[in-house]
Image (cartoon, rainbow, N blue to C red; front, side, top):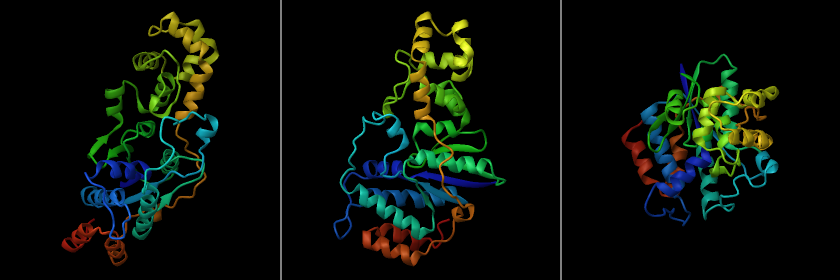
Length: 299
């Protein structure tokens, strides 16, 4: 079985920019490079430690997403403007990934999570025997985990998350995680959920009923008060049914983004180190060049 490392570009580069070094790094020309440098330092370490067979990168776009069009308050609790130098660092990172021959997928109107979900879906429907490692710490990706086939990896910390870990930590399966978020909401993305229902009640409801679909199907819920729910909880669910289902739509990762992917393009190949060393020198990434000199093959 081959392994594919699916990288969330924006999340990783933001993490690199703000958690990688104590001081801001700049190139000899004055270009801010902290995020780009830490990104590729970690990236090369990942190649050595995990020996991936395939890699691709998913990126957000600047265009307004369909979720923002659905719900203007979506992610309103996050700053709209990028930090100084971030746009240039993202541009540089994509440039270097292109030199490395690593495909970067993006589509206006969609988030990186939707690109990741679509790649996962295409692989699941193909005849390819591929294990997928989603390189993110974003909990939204939990819904994509599958036993023995899809897992998550926090590359910076080296922590791996598999299907069974979710059940132990959250009390629900990855497949139920969307319904869990729809019930309790998600403050980090400003997703409303059902007002008055917290994580404990959400877990109890899903343990008894299995899914939101079963809770709301054909008045079944109104005719049978769940063990986990008090009459007040039942009332909240009935009165806020539309908001609950709307929240589920917001947190569900799309798996049908209209992008063309090529498995051959994802295969890891030997890099053109002449070009890489040239751009690394321009940016002042001398330690990355030295690593190449000491070890002629990193993967």
